[in-house]
Length: 137
Image (cartoon, rainbow, N blue to C red; front, side):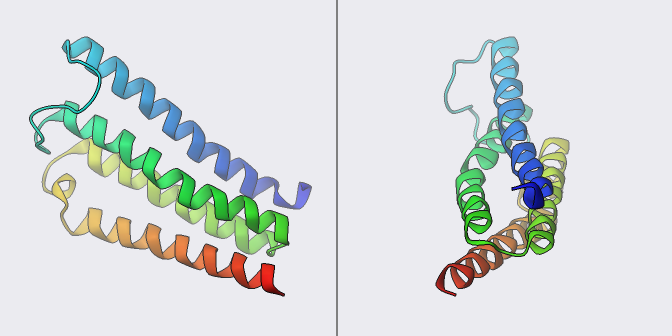
C-alpha cells in the first residue's frame, strides 16, 4: 500500500474537507440562530445557504469518488496515475469550495462552477473506467 500513499493522503484530505465543512456549517447555523436542516431562503446571496450547500456538495461528492479510488488501489491501478487523478480531484473540490463560499456571480451556478462540476465529474468517470478496466484484466 506504500505505493498508494499519495492517493491515500488525497482521499483523507477529501474526507477531512467534508468534516471541516460540517463543523463550519453547523457552527455558522448555531451563531445565526438557525435550526439544523435546510437553510432558508434558498438563495445563493445568502451566505448561510452557501455554507450549507458547499458542505452538502462535499458530502454528496465523496462516496462516488472515494469508493472507486479505494477499489483502484485494490485492483492495482498505476499508483502515479491514481495519485494524479486524486490530487486533480482534490484541487477541483477545493477551488469549488472557495468559489462557492466567496459568492457573487461565480457562486450562482455560473460558468466557473459549471466547469468545476463537469471537470470533477470527468475525473470521476476516468477513475471509474480505469478501475473497471484494471479489474477486468
